[in-house]
Length: 272
Image (cartoon, rainbow, N blue to C red; front, side, top):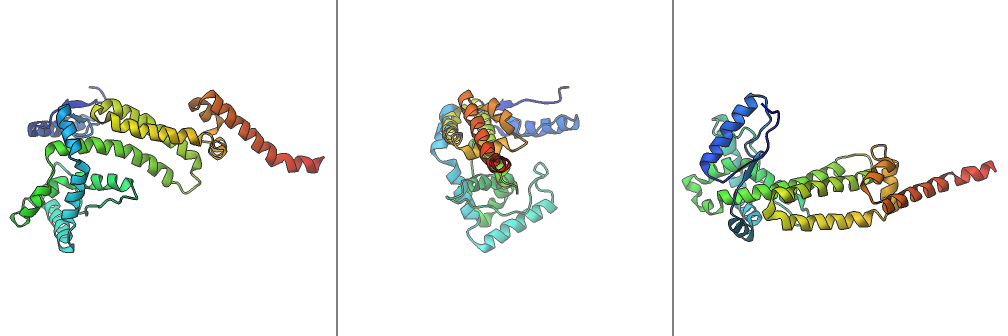
């Protein structure tokens, strides 16, 4: 059998959920990397997809999180419920569920929206069971429909790429100016691939790509970015020559030569 499996497209019927779980078990046992969600593309009619987007599924996640975090007692009950569920093996098909709290997002930190969605999707099987209890019937209106979760999974993929790029730059303890443009190059390339894989989100992804490309174009005109990359052994001038236009690469080379001349000019003058 092949070492890798591509994407499988299917609708959101519960029987397909079961099939993907079984397929994951079989393939993993054969040593083939496969994930029930990561290797699945959920099919939705374009009209349905557009209606779900118009309904703002991210706001629905926000409302759900707010409801489940509305009081200290509810947060405590939710975490205890997960702990008891793990002990009784209530979610054997979701081994990554942990006794964690849901996360709110923050308008001034875009990545917090990704983290909010990440935690909600991770814990959603537990959320469903928690809300189904008769004493919490008032929370049922906040549950996400299967189609909502399918669209959110696509949005999640788009935000995940940007989050990873941000983490790449912010996780280093050394100066990271040299990493910024290469990270954004990878971000743009990944978004362009997702634009093909997720046609209903193509327009929104394009807006993001155009914004990042505008930023990169302006940054390539800055000497500091190019000099930081040239002196970094990971990139040097060769990376710039490979990824930038000829004109931009020539400008970067010229700036580097000028910097070297300025650096060594005092030494040369003393020698003379």
